[in-house]
Image (cartoon, rainbow, N blue to C red; front, side, top):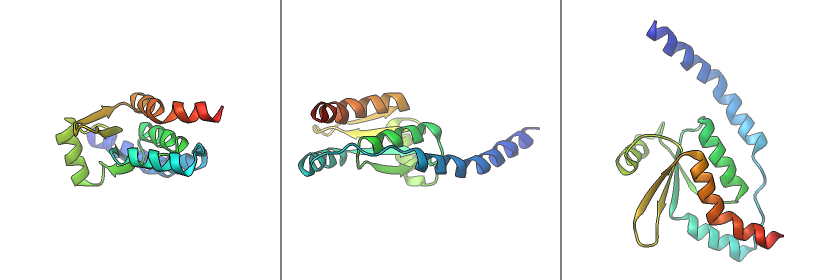
Length: 136
């Protein structure tokens, strides 16, 4: 029975994965506009960030959409298919759970932020407010 259930869900994932990826592409918002100097500043800050993710995880898609909306160039690391990234996530963050945002602070400390809502809130606080205030 267990094998039957696993097979069912693997088949379901195979069917839904392309639908989810196409849906993400069609519904990803346009990035906010920044001046070249502001974008360069944001890009520099993003060098200290990495998103550990699975391609078809709905919560990862949610974070990727926020990253696109904020116009951020954050490295994406596939923790599902890349064993090295999976190992880094397990050793650094303590568990293989996605999405996870790796934040390397200026003082060299590393923070591992889990949960899509927490990641989106952090990204919005860090990169969204100043840009929205300037647009208004």
